[in-house]
Length: 411
Image (cartoon, rainbow, N blue to C red; front, side, top):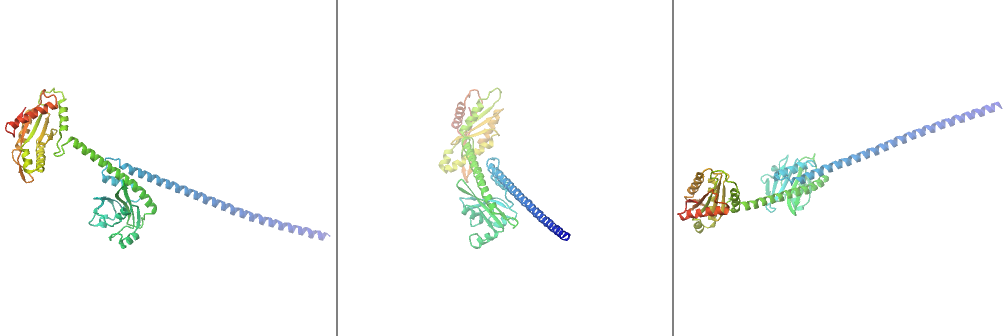
């Protein structure tokens, strides 16, 4: 019986050891599984965090690029408001601003001229040399079948590889010439319902190839460039027109001398000054050409106009800086000499004018003779208005004419 009990006890111990081993094995496998799961979780979280960080960096990069682009486009738009810029400086500034968003090492702007018949490469910078590409017809050439013209005809942005360019040339759609660009990107300049030209960037190496993303950006930028150029030229034309109207308002259209209204203002300003200095302040010369009607009758009005221009040059050459020379109209002129300290200055000028008109003038190989009757008026308290002053000078001129012409008379 004791033997049986011992056997049972040993059997129980054996079962207990097996259970302990099994439990230990299960625990170890569980621990290993937990460890693998934990590591996998850490790796998954790390991957997600990395992806989130990359996404955030991408967003930041995109936002930064967009901010740079917007700033660039704003500066391009502002260029049209700079009245100090020449059109050449505007083109150069556009190229410089664009370099912040796209490579402009090889860049040009081509403008249509002569009602679309001529292409003018008005601004360019190029590492290869556009002169080599276009040889004798640079920077201006007749419109043909070049890459630039393709953009003009299509009216849209074009991105071309070297292979595409070669194939276009082989197909006859492009003029045969040596095209060195590995990547070519051109966009139309279109504003105010008018095709202005094309803006282009290109690359001569396969290390720089423009992408569709570049093409979209360049197309967007070209619209702002077009607007800037259009506004600049519109303002320039408006300024030129204002200056032309100001010239018309102040000066004689034929001779460029002061007109009647401008001279009247000068005289009125002079008469308004207080006369407290006991010197001759001014003199007024009223000049009427002798024989001018005969010139028109003999040679025609064209020669007559050229004679008036020549006489105007003579009159301007005899006076001092600051003196005013005016064409009243027809063949009548006024000269206002201000700041005189002696009557001799006036008399000397009058004699020099008469001397120059004493001999025939050669106009278009024709010998043309005219004289001058000159009325001279010196400063006097009696001349209280420009009307009174002009009347006195006119009377003195007629006295000179009645006395035999080509002479002067002091009123």
